[in-house]
Length: 194
Image 1 (tube, one colour):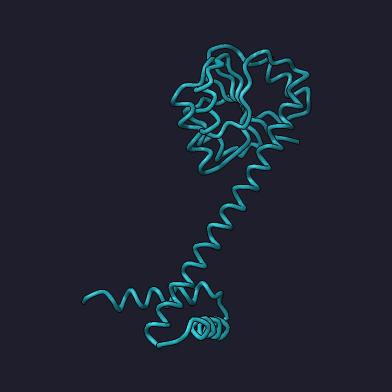
Image 2: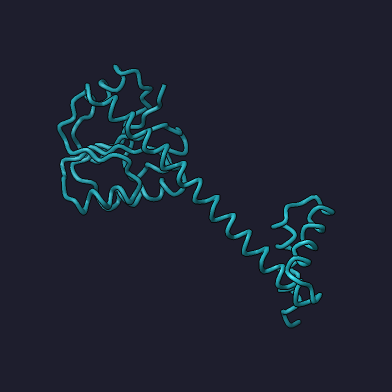
């Protein structure tokens, strides 16, 4: 059962939305949160999805979403009256998964939520792959730098420097990148004047 956090920055009651979601079988968390307390509530309650009801998302709301998205990303659906294209782009950049302009019928809630969850999961996989690729590239650069240091210091060929790195990694039972990190750190320490 999905845990849903409702967020509102309007004075209008959102009981109808809450009731419709509860009838669909979603676990509704506490009382609706405000955008200002969003990050704190997300850390405490750990909802599966966040639904924001707003007349027009304020800059504060978008900033709070961006902070939350950077530290604890969640699928976010935003229901708004404002169809301004720039505002929609700003909302998506802040982490909104789906932005819907009014006209919400309760029978559309479940499919909209499912699409938002699927899109969020796909984006999470892409982010994970990107992070992994960036880490692998950083490790490769570190290994290349360590090879150059060994080539200069010990007058080795590139294959011989790589073999030396591998041998040291196996002897220490650590990853090749860790040995490269040690060599680079040692070389940097030797370069610094006392």
